[in-house]
Length: 153
Image 1: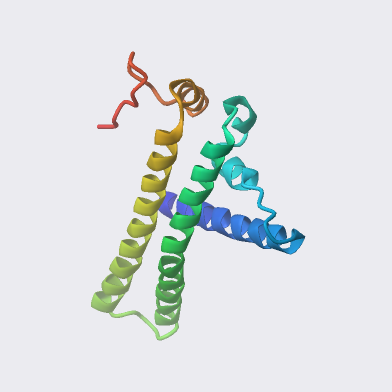
Image 2 (image 1 turned 180 degrees about the vertical axis):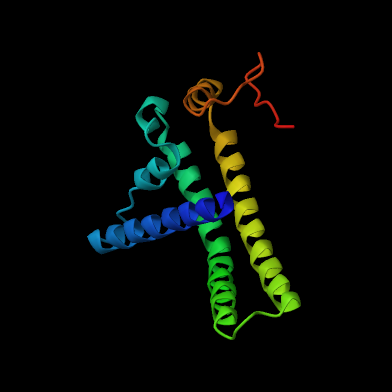
């Protein structure tokens, strides 16, 4: 259930960002506000981070790349979910077919989550030590004395 919520959250982030991008493009050529992408990642602490314009640009690029790479996966996830829904309408599903479809959907969700974690890691690498400390404090992530993220075991 947790993975489903996370994938829905990630999808909502992509949809919100795409809507924001479309609105910005309608505002006029060359007008680009990357703050909405950054806010999606760091809200409600975005202002406290005092990100530079360069950091915001890099973060927006990371998000855009992740979205582009995730889009076909979300399309595949929709197809896989549709197949699972259809399977239930044909009576008691064949156990092997059900497992196969569930495994396919799980693989897609796994790939989406990997993209999400890799994008977050890239974004975190862009932050200064002070910015990382603010993020860590907000999200209750423990840092070592050198400001390095503790790795979960």
